[in-house]
Structures are given as C-alpha cells and as structure tokens.
Amino acid sequence: MLQISPISDLRNYTEVLNEVDTFGRVYLTRNGRGAYAIMTIEEAEELDRLKAAYAVVSELKKSEERGHREGWISDKEIREDMGI
Image (cartoon, rainbow, N blue to C red; front, side, top):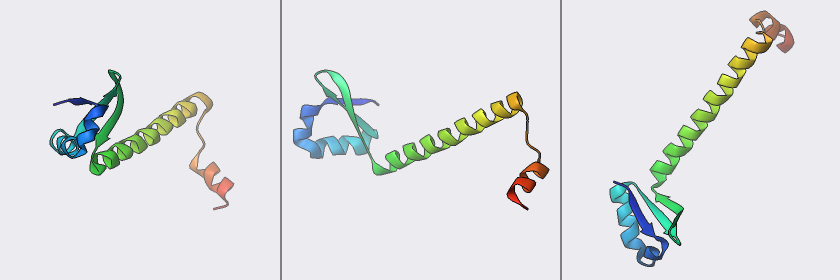
C-alpha cells in the first residue's frame, strides 16, 4: 500500500520510520507536492543494483546497435590489438 505523508509528520519520526518498515517506503510531501521518499537500506541497495544493471544493459544495447550499424570486430582483430 502506498504511504504518503506531509513532511511535518517527521516531527514524530519514530512513527514515520515504523511506517517505512510496514509499507516499505514512505513518500513525503512539501506544500502538497512529492518531495522525498524514505526507504530501508536494503531497498535502497536493491534500487542501486537495479540501476547499475539497467546501465550495463543499456550500454550493451548501444554497443550492439553500433555493431550492426558500423560492423563487428573479429576476435582475431581484438587479440591483435591487445597483443595476445
């Protein structure tokens, strides 16, 4: 369930933190607009892992498109360039 609270609820931060444990994330508003999200360390770490994985997949997709557009380098050419 989505938990949205005004930032003024942080006056009683213990209660807000209990909601983070219960609902997974609490979104805080300032002047009626979304401003912050409070989440557990585990959820933040998982989000970081997902962002990193997305960045890798995105770069691989760009590389694949470039290979199709400009041509591929053979493993022999790579070994020669690396001096192997």
